[in-house]
Length: 376
Image 1 (cartoon, rainbow, N blue to C red):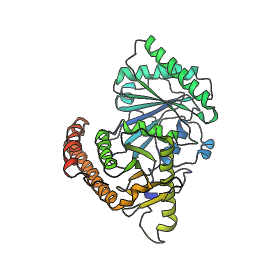
Image 2: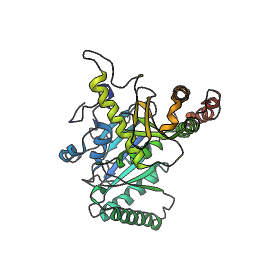
Image 3: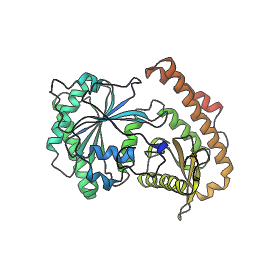
Image 4: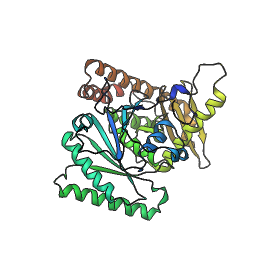
């Protein structure tokens, strides 16, 4: 992998080096993957977010990143669910430049992430946010608009809340004054020095996964029949959770699950792979049980090469591990069917509309027939 990225993962797990655009911002890939645009003023932290989340760069190493001066395209293709492109835009980009093709850039965009530096005066950033959102919405009303209030690690809790409230109020007032009250902005407090940036990107990516309701349905069935309190379906490389059950997400629980993935991969890389072996550190045999001192158990199971199920449950409910493992096999089989239906849909029609109907049918019908029936 190009660049100074962390090497805690095998090379097979790399997302690959970013594909730097050669000035032709309108160039698109043949498979037309959903596109996430990273925008914001200079030095707001856009490139750092991309490197930390998708290239495993240490947050401290981002201090040495140079400012982005051209559009950088990054193809994210880890699993059948996590497939999209990230375009990192320079902060000085001029929307009124004749060479800026709004139709091409915003037309194929699934989500637009605007990064605001919370430690700086954000009035100019709000003006740029309004200009960006207004321009993008006119081209593509279906874009999901996400605002990362970034670098909040240096703020007190009260200051974080006040900053978020102020930015939220000003941004929405500007849209209302312009007659664009139909535009919905989602706001997140983020920092690369904790797990908040991973959780925020999880929410962004989930909106681009048409199978999300099916995945949530499967996870709800799993936890209801296995005595599990919380379950996450993780993309192992980025630690983005592409789905979770319908119960609220507790930040501390999410952080524990992220740390567990790091422990499993790091230990497997050290002790689980023999020299001169092509075996990967994370494979079909990967699983882990971690018992905490508060009678809570973290349980990780491999779903496929890129996805892992991480569950949180009470120690007493783990006495029937055999039932939990059986239910997991049913869950894994259902996930494989979701993959198969999606591949069939893509073969018939590359458009997203071809994927919604069969996936919904699978989630409601086949899941029940093959489903998780053992009671713990």
